[in-house]
Figure: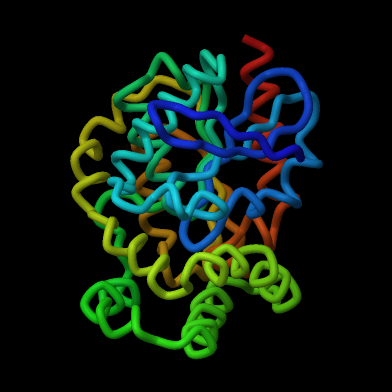
Length: 273
């Protein structure tokens, strides 16, 4: 994957890109980055893979300072970037907050979306999760934590979402350096302060009117985004849901082959139309 940068409306937006063909945009969540998709993209054939980096996340953490980095605004940023990058329409693949961004885009900008693949996504009133609500309340105290103390909390938070310990360690090595380079706890607290459940609630009653093909993949053992919400989302989108019994939250890292399989299945569906 090649990292690219484009200035859009005064914001340096970054993404990782590989291949040619039908555009597939990959949307990560918190506390991850485009590296979340490192094991998925190689198994998705004949596409232009674009792993977009949310403003204020990953290597773009500095771009989030002083800006609205809510899920609602990320949807607007994404569409502005698509226009600037010459991507007229794309298949959106979203995890966690990225799944929330994808839902908002498909409701507000349906002409931009060819299809949806969602996994363990925020939706309805499923978020922020209790741990994050505690951090939102204790934000001022957390911001003062030394890097070593915060890195321990970050490791524990990340590991709870993995069912494969080796992948949890790998995930930490991929995503933690962005926080370490950007002030640690302060960057993370800035992100969680931006989380507002009204962003998904405001479009939730319109999901059942979405008329594009979709598929869902969900880790059934996820305690962050529980599978009941996945079934509700699948019902509204009239989409099949693949249940990964042992899967927890970070299925793109722990079960990339299952995610890639569903993306390929939806691509086949789109190409047959």
